[in-house]
Amino acid sequence: MKFDKWNIKLLNSPLGACENKHSPPNQVAVLMSGGVDSSVTAYLLKEQGWNIFGVTMMIPVSCNAGKKGCCGADAALVCEELEIPHYLIDVTEPFQKLIIENFVQSYTKGQTPNPCVDCNTQLKFSLLWDFLEENFGTCNLATGHYAKVSKSNERTYLGKATDKTKDQSYFLYGITIEKLSRLILPLVDFTKEKVRSIATELNLSVAEKSESMELCFAGEGDYRSVLDISEINREGDITDMQGNKIATHKGIANYTLGQRQGIGYAGGKPLYVAKIDADSNTIALGEREDISYNVIKSNQVNVLIPEEFVADSRLFGKIRSYGNSQPCKIVETGKDEVIVEFDEPQFAPCPGQKLVLYNNDDNIVAGGTIIS
Image (cartoon, rainbow, N blue to C red; front, side, top):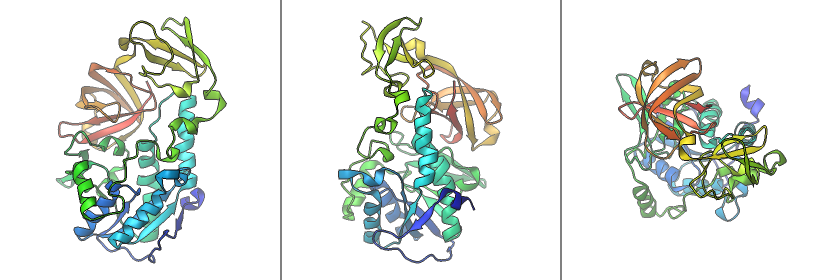
């Protein structure tokens, strides 16, 4: 059984948990991080008549989060306040191997990973969801993400939230078509301010909890604390685009493509990290045009609208979670790969980050990992 392989275990909630039961047709598991978004998600679904229970993942590092507090304890307390069951699922082993180790290995290759997308794709919407179904019966899954699940003509689509400044659909593209119809996202039409006001009105214990800006497995610290390995923290050469040494860097883990601040070199004009060569342990600096590209290639592609994932399709692409999606067209598709050409050069597409493609309706057509 794959859960034995990964050593995933159902633990008792810090404040107690009810016994497993057969799945009612309106059962939904709410992934609860101990934050205000997932807490209000649980409240909204309960008010709508869903049979809900809260689920929190126990992962490495974050449960020793110091002054931030333990997400499992916060989530369990909210579930007690809402009078719903809460379960803690130990996923430390798969999280370590699939998310943290991949995060570290990406940096050793000079890439810039997106562990939040990887966690959704490989863990939450895959192993964890399958584990819940085996232990609780077939169930829907809800999260506090700001994105939209819509249905039309017996098809289910994943798209942008109403508040485009808060939209988080970029992080969710990796869900399979088969599971998409059972994903529930109640915050699609909400703003962050409205969500927090609901939590305040309910007097939830997490109503004033600050929004986490760091990686969950880094606790209160900087992500570089996870990258404490010698091979990516060795000093090396900083060069110009012609390969001439101009300075010394502090280790490639401290830099990402497109970075301008904190490089440690002033060239009299705006310079950015344009290349990271892990093999030679060098970083090259260039001007904005040196790191802007029209054509981007991705692999590990997940397709949600197959009929639009074809050559010459006009779409809108995002190469990072923030900012607007930009006009582009699909140049070529292959097994697990896609090449797109943007109308305008895109600044600093980073290998390891994600390319997500949307159609005119703001629904996700496909997404994958940038490789070049």
